[in-house]
Length: 290
Image 1 (spheres, rainbow, N blue to C red):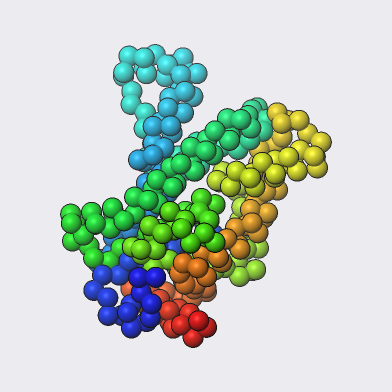
Image 2 (cartoon, rainbow, N blue to C red; image 1 turned 45 degrees about the horizontal axis):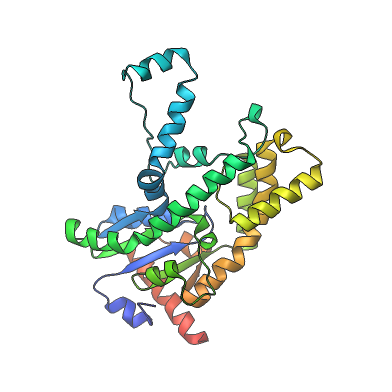
């Protein structure tokens, strides 16, 4: 770790942190808070994925749909309209909409083969966006003068790395440049995330082996053919299993590559001073149990 002790952290002139954990536990909130206070550069991995690495895929998908409408088709063919994604740090809907859900096309579902193809695209994009992080640390300093840097990673970071491999290229590159900080949720947080997801199921990225096994198990359990699957029903069924799959991977990332804080602690952060204190206390905790 680039900061071994609380003293290292407090003495650092440049503080660099990567937050990871389940979506919905405060990563973007904290990063936005630090950015708003000034002095911190906020790098969003999902935003980088959606703009730099999958922006063309997303825009082409919009155009594909627009071409089905005779009115828009004519405007597109004559270059009379421009279609682009308006993705932001707080609105990643264009990216998740492109990822989609597998199942009945009449309900907006994708064939499983197409779904897997888009999942593979996301995996490649996420790895590339994570590996871009050290370069953005340099850019933030060189162009804007930011010494403090916070990386707001996606919830699926644990699916594209091997936390138990000391030579994992992504984690090696990241941990050499930033302090890896897991925001760990409680059982109550997990239950609330599941309730929230059940109300509004959204597309997400899954580890390939997990996804293949989940899809096969769902088809076997329901007896449905691939094209008859309700896309929302499948992702609802999968969500809690995906969280359970991710939990030990997050824990291994924190154990082998960084530190852990709780979602309750993160929820109590009101300013950059609170954040500095939280990281220092977490480093003290790790040192006490080492």
